[in-house]
Image (cartoon, rainbow, N blue to C red; front, side, top):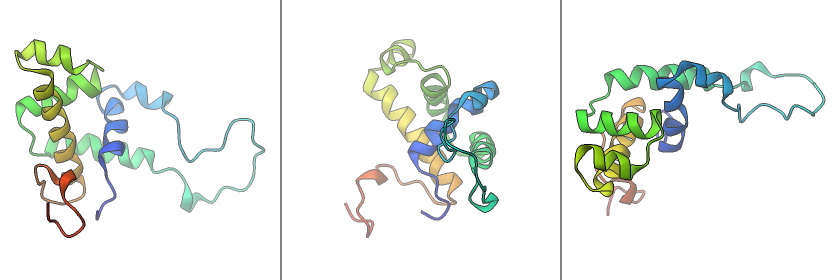
Length: 130
């Protein structure tokens, strides 16, 4: 993966794309616990959260997602709706709503990495074979 964006990182960042105030409450995985003593900070190893947020926010507007994928991703990751409710809203089975959201996140991650999205790429092995 060239750019280092994966589904987990994109999914974790999406809430802050839709609600900028949510970024202030997100835990920085690289920060020490509050009760740890303060010490020297190597700025080269600092958090890249804001960079990821900016990239995912821009990618949301530039990635080639269908309207169904965008709606499903927004409802799931922006509003935290369960797949059952998303499916009910659009008259589809929950698995269809889930597939749309997962495909949207996958396309977004591939776009951020400068790669072409391959549907079902999670089933591919290292050599690109199924």
